Length: 95
Image 1 (cartoon, rainbow, N blue to C red):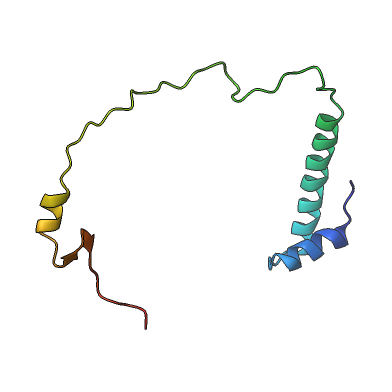
Image 2 (image 1 turned 90 degrees about the vertical axis):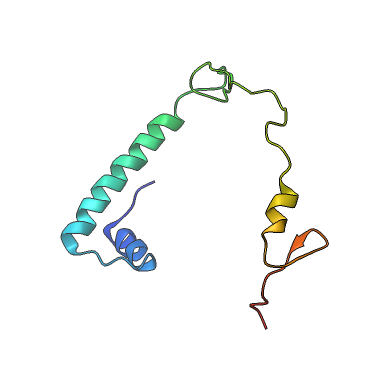
């Protein structure tokens, strides 16, 4: 895919970015290089490669699924300004 200087200026305008003539030429050069790299990467045959979930062969360490804290709901609700049916009541902020 090739871009023109007008394409760069139009994209900058759509993004509400003010670019000068020199900045537009610099951006065009950089974007052309990026698109060239993408074309090179797409040309590589990856059909025989198995997809991986991670770049390195690592396993996530998992902890046992056990309760480590005690239930303190009654304590927390005892200091709350207003509680009803085990729910915290807050002032209405939307009319």
